[in-house]
Amino acid sequence: MKAASIISYILAGIVIIFAFLFILGAFSATGSDSWLFVGLLGLAVGFGLIYAGSRFAAKANPVENTMTVKLDLPGNVQMEAMSCQSCGSPLAPEDISLVNGAAVVNCHSCGTTYQLVEEPKW
Image 1 (cartoon, rainbow, N blue to C red):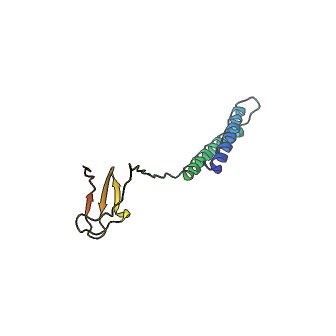
Image 2 (cartoon, rainbow, N blue to C red):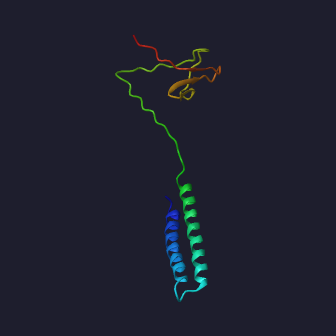
Image 3 (cartoon, rainbow, N blue to C red):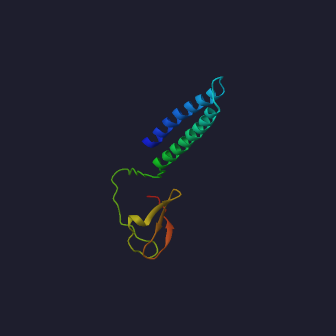
């Protein structure tokens, strides 16, 4: 949360407390009608500060979605260069993406899109 939103909330609390006291004082025996106006104006300012504080807080917390995939390979694994099933051109890591939990290949040479299928090793 940004410092501006915290300060705005604190000021709003102070202004609303004093505005409430002005409204209560307007109904006392020695009170004045102008105190009611000042109290209502103070309430409006206090709630305006709460609104401003919420806007500051919304700007301070942008939503960021990141996904990290960690792959634990068993034993001694040797990597092979991958090539497209259609045209045979070599594939770069940028050509492979994860879509709905499945690895999908988009060949940059021929434009073919297909899902990678892991075949059994036996």
